[in-house]
Length: 406
Image (tube, rainbow, N blue to C red; front, top):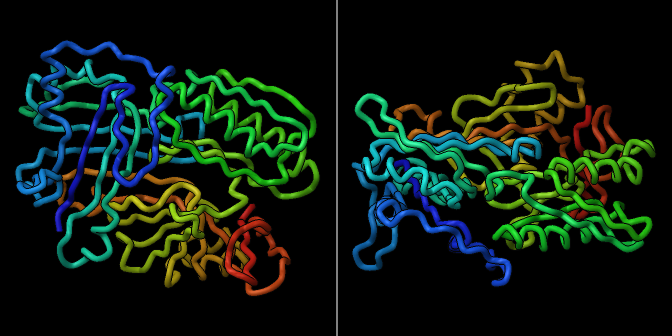
């Protein structure tokens, strides 16, 4: 079972849609024709990318026929979280052993879009669990690319913005709502226009239906996505949040796997088929043991996988008792009970890769999981430090979900 990867890049405005995703192009009137890089640089880049650890099928020409033992070494560290102030995470990709002409062309790929797949190929003993998790772990834009010579290796270093454009403050968001409209609809309409102008339109808005426009109004957000988050949180506190004595988790704005997400976590995430989504982790899925990272927060390391996103619900099955020992003194009995039963919410992901390292932890996905209380068969009473997660959750009948808040 080998580590496998695929790196694809496209010039600005020419991003091709990966198979299995829906991302229609922006209107023709809004497309911008980028300045083409010098011909020699363009030819060198076209020959080098896409870069894959798999050979092509001689019959179909498609990637993934067999592992290449001489595949170039890549190293990366991609993180994603719900913090809009840092673009939702930081991303860096390094490719070793590149030809000199590619190093000379490094500046020419600034502004290019980039997609990275990573995971495992089929093979014993874990092919059934890991091979299907091979998929895209990053969509973004290259900025500040540079070449380097370290020892005898040529390095191509690619800093990447996970927003899909180099800065989060080059976008204008016009929020226009009439009395009675939900802010979810207002934000979705505004992002449809704003993101089309930047050449991409993959986003997801999930806000509480209680968050409504009380009177017709117009707002402009011109500085950053962080300001959009702060604006929505001010509205939420006054309408349904702590100002009325109710718990409200707050609005998060972040980019994860090419999708801009605006969410207050009041409804659980759904899979592409619109079904309630939850990730179940077995004891054989871990590298090492889960560890307490903070009060009510757990850090787990898994072999590289692409299926877990920020805000996904995660269940440890069976729940591991190691969690009850390390940080038990800081937790109350109800939280310990929830830890025993293994219900969590993913608050951050980190993909760490070194394709030639012998260490299992260097081709891995690290999840930061916030503790959720287990579903209850009946009732809506609160636990100490735990609040109802959301009354509109499309979960199975007679199930109430709780969120850890203290």
